[in-house]
Image 1 (tube, rainbow, N blue to C red):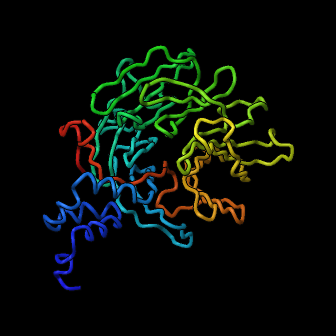
Image 2 (tube, helix red, strand yellow; image 1 turned 120 degrees about the vertical axis):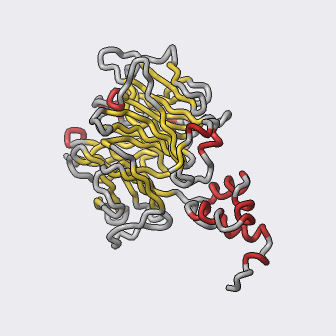
Length: 375
């Protein structure tokens, strides 16, 4: 190619070429020349690029290192490891939880500073623009990550405001203590008039709402509308008439844009004595009758709280599985009906999930330049 190849191309052709590049290449391309910078900065390009971006896998290892991997096509299980697109180390990391929406990650983390004093913090970051902000936990009363029984991060459907939600663990009181942080406001708000029930785990974000497993007099799925900040409920898949504890061995997640419900059944819940995982998908959001049983997978005793991450074209699944107190990544072959633990991503004790890389800066979310830290 001649040096003036790009110089002679029309701007719309150059833009089309850049739209096909991975998100991590765009910040580098902006530094090449002013012409490329002017082509790649407009909001129209950022939105178009996000619409074409393929979902990536984000992995948080037990060392505090956050890595992002491409997940286009099928996984090559013969490789010894995958090279990350980008990575970031969180200092003094001890353990954490992770959720994502629209390319932004929310990390609920605890650790210890140089004086061995415990520090609890929520981070919101964009690994592509390499920006992060820190949110202090509610101080009335002072919470720790271990006090939070349910949490979530999402964006409202109409106003487009990003919000973090904390639900406090209240073992001696059935009342829900729910706090909401709207990015850009700088403070938490306590919601009044909340329902009396138990919420558990990471909120699955679907259709502008966060969802948790909850119990009233019968098992339900709790839905929190991030626009109106109101709770509602709908039915879980039609298995719960068996009378077994609802939240034990059950989990909610998002799979292929739909609400996904997983249930692990022990030998006491099966006539055949097998230990298996059942995965349900809500095909039509909010319609109880649309729950569809997609997978029944034999699993080992000790596996629990399974979160499916990605369905491949051949029906195989990439999953996050808790095994003896630690989370690991497993690959399920739909053809062979087998589970395989994989260490392709450089960590064997992980929190992981799917997200779509974005070029949108955290500075555009109304946070103020002074609150955004570049790394």
